[in-house]
Length: 449
Image (tube, rainbow, N blue to C red; front, side, top):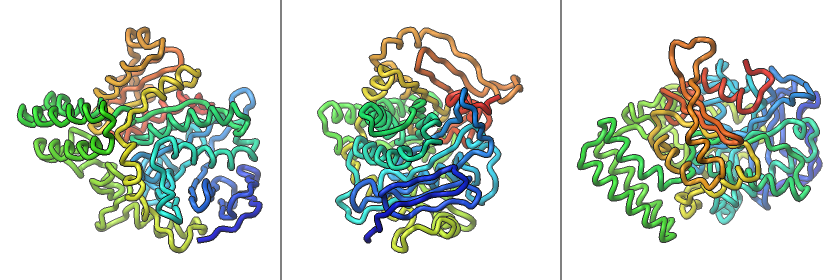
């Protein structure tokens, strides 16, 4: 499919005025509250983005209004679909207003990344990215096209928020953005990076699964021994650089966990598989662990029908031969060699460069368990680690109600950690109140209470 190269003007009322020699496929709402479009990040590789303006936006030069860039997991998960309608956008999958939308605290940009995810697509299967770094390069190209011609966005500090595998994209993107800024290629202020239940160190997560489930009585000694055996095999494969083999063993380990736990939910170990309220609301299947994009064909509204139906009609610029999620499986397959690689060193480098790094984790998540997150944090070479680990934690509540503890918080210098109680993998949905307050604090929103 060919694309027309020409100057484009996007949106109205000055919110997103974008002029670029990129492909001419863009649109927005008449009042300027939303804008969306495609950027050709490489020849015949097209990335889709969607930007929302917060109704609470405050124009204050002394306290700039922030922008959140949301990166979904998978790899192959659609931020434009799942993150937007399933988690933090203004509307839910029933197109009803979401009371806990993060737009209360910031503008939000959703991106379908890597190319092939959601509404993003490639015209040649050879163009799928194979590494986290390649994905970050494409995202940086997109940000250059959008930010370098937009003074309003340049004044708005960008906070990269990620969920699940998106955390690996976030830290590699953060470093790529810093380099582009240093070289004068990108006009952007990086406010920080926030890693939500993020797959930063696969080794530490798989090693945590068996012991965690045994401690909460979800597996027995036999299941623990079989789980630990496979986890140690993965550890050795990673040490030997056998990353694709480690990915295959990871899949085998998930099967063992499911067998000996009687199908525990990987997104909430208090539930059985498929009972997660987030999965139920979006009708997403078990394959969500790999792509976020498979949809169960069940009665009632589901994310696939929504995105390929009314949302597609609203956007008006999706090519006729592109289906939302149609290439997502290929995205995961192309990255099989990078899937199990750790990105702890990238977190260290961000901290060294003075970037604000925040981690938040749901208490009952299994796939990216807090136990595993705490394990990889101890591997940081950051010079503030020892002091951080010896600090006390501050309890978190929902608003002024201090009758129930909703979480804990600890920070030192440019590193912070939020423990969110009662939440699984999808923190913004399962604990919306404390999550929203957390976001306000992270992005230093003028609207935070």
